[in-house]
Image (tube, rainbow, N blue to C red; front, side, top):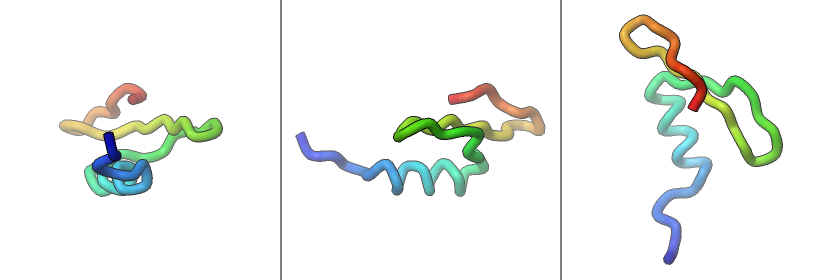
Length: 43
């Protein structure tokens, strides 16, 4: 089954939605975001 979205496209979409990269190890990226004025947990 072909991929619908690349990892780069998904990451850009999350960043536009207010998420920030917390750390990265290899291809694994941890993100944090703000929702209703509170910092969300790692995703």
